[in-house]
Image 1 (cartoon, rainbow, N blue to C red):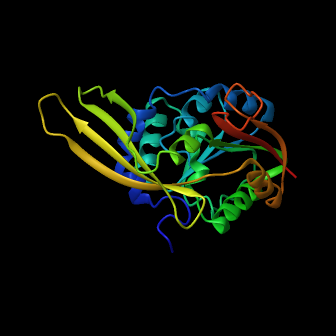
Image 2: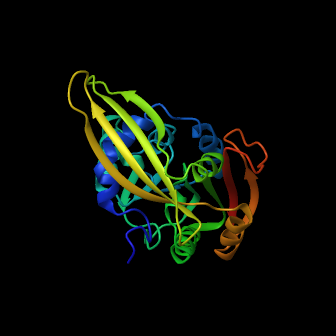
Length: 261
């Protein structure tokens, strides 16, 4: 099996889980979108590729019953600790499974894959399996939200081999974290091969670098709509941003709201 056939292997995100948490600690641009749609569904929620619980925690605070699925032990441990610290562990079940083959013995009123995580699945068969698996865990008429990066992914596609600065953040212990990405277009498919450099440093001390590789599939709108329809979904809307603006070719996001048929 190819290293990136399904979701990233556990070791990959285990390696950078603390960095990911620092990088996304202040990111909540998409939270209102999920809160508003969850309010319409009135039932248990399922987040696929839930990571360290960035969205699970605020939704659990609002009283929802949630299940979060991820492959990374380290990410799930961070999520579990956050939920326990706020006394919310009873509202959220964390499951370590691959979203392509998951078996949860429960159906949900809403499922979602946030912040472009689905695009890490670059093989068509696994993309189909993941969507079919999501559909199998949704009651008829339930909602499915799929958020995919659009403008940023296209931008990286045009910067083959260059080094992009994603940001620099200061941790509470005084250390700094810088995230750099070098994108290269694949020669075998419509995806990018990304090399991530995470540099940790304290002023005057040696830089500690962690390197990780991922892949990012470059979806077209009609391609994604067809995949959703093949999996048993009815596409209701396609948004271009977290304010639910109409999707255009240069929109920052490509967000699908679908219904389980």
